[in-house]
Length: 75
Image (tube, rainbow, N blue to C red):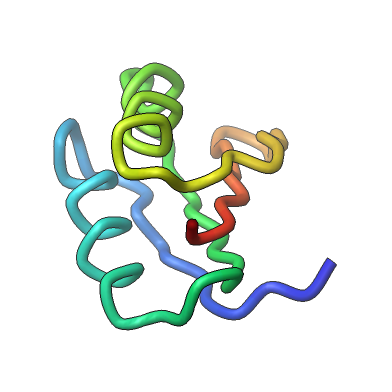
């Protein structure tokens, strides 16, 4: 899968990872795929909720050591 943008949000706590995701996705075309790397435990709830509310698709969540990687397609 081609990733258009990667957002590094390690070390940031709620709500900053999702705020960074929302801000970066605003300038992308529909269908763009963003990888959000976050280690905030609340992101597992916040990212899917954000996607559902904003009309984006959470493609998958991967584990990368202490970090989770959320792949999101812009709606």
